[in-house]
Amino acid sequence: MKKIKLLLADDNEYTRTSIRQLLELDDAVDIVDEACNGLEVMEKVEALNPEIVLMDVNMPIMDGIETTRELTIKYPQVAVVLISINDEIQNFRQAMLAGAKEYLVKPLSAEELNQAIRQVTEIIREASDNQQVEVPPSLNRAENHKIVTVFGTKGGVGKSVVCTNLAVCAAQKYRGKVGLIDLDVQFGDLSIMMNVNPRMTIAELMQEGEKPSPDILENYLYERNGVHLLSAPNKPELSELVVARGVKEILNISRSMFTYTFVDTPSFVDEITLTALEEADIILLMISLDLPTIKNVKKGIDILRTLQLLSRTRLILNRSSGIAGLEPRDVERVLDMKIKAEVPSDGKLVVSSLNQGIPFVKMNPKAAVSKGIEAVFQVIENGRDV
Ligand SMILES: Nc1ncnc2c1ncn2[C@@H]1O[C@H](COP(=O)(O)OP(=O)(O)OP(=O)(O)O)[C@@H](O)[C@H]1O
Ligand SMILES: [Mg+2]
Image (cartoon, rainbow, N blue to C red; front, side):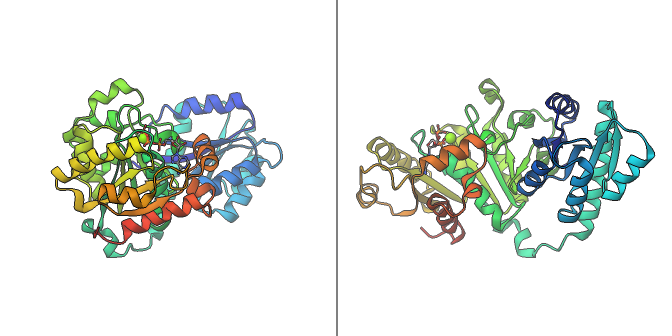
């Protein structure tokens, strides 16, 4: 089953922690965030698009009933499950009138809570399936689906930052049709960048007895901003579980599911990175304007040439507006390759986006660095010619 995106609201931190512990017994539930009053709930629903809001009735500023009423009007697709200490029928009626789907009385058991969440999810998903508009057939055809591998032979060149923001940018056009896979299996940081706390990662997926299928892969994906993320293992030592053959299978399943699958890689070339390069329809080779990177990238280009992958490679310059060093035109001459798009430097926005776990294309879509990401996306959309 696709993960149930849930926002948890209670003004008491202790209660939130204990409810979180109960919910986390169920792998199908993904707590996208917490809120401590009704106003915060409204803001977070707008930003995070959860399916369920699990909320205490007694909260300051805007209580649970009033918030339910507002949610029902503004976001009718979101289901509210209310929790209260009060078991009187009058309170229950008030909750239902405001539009709540379920009313639970404290103290809660894990079983009762998770069963209620699953039942409500089933109801709302069935309703939304019935309302789904037909997807144009062109979008459904797997041959239109592309794997985009972000590659670079120098650490810290901006692969992960660009990969995450590109995926979120793509999801603005292809919402829900974008996958993101973290193949930096030792030190991958995409889950932090996307504000996901994954229990299920590529390491657990590798331990599945069966060959992966879309149904199986779905259990391991976490959705944020319209992007479905498969995270790197939670501990570096678990990376040993990830093997190239399994990665190849996962990439192919992901391609069948999503219009775009963006793949982040480490800065070294091992069997897993090679698989991500060979399976890619488009390779973004990331560079920045400093001598060590340029020297390194020449080696990267040699590898791509040997693998006969240069024709699907696009050279992308990150931090183009950074401290003066080399000139882009000189770099093009040295590498004998044209730079296809540039992402300017914006330390302030990039760092604050990383610290908050909100991709900068969301935080500030008008910033030059976000426009740079759009330009990269346009390169991807514009066909395969180099
Ligand atoms: N366009 C940019 N403007 C400002 N800072 C940037 C930009 N791109 C990346 N950075 C900074 O560079 C750092 C490294 O970026 P990132 O983690 O994406 O690199 P990476 O290539 O994935 O590194 P690694 O190889 O270690 O995984 C980030 O923490 C971020 O602060
Ligand atoms: Mg990285």
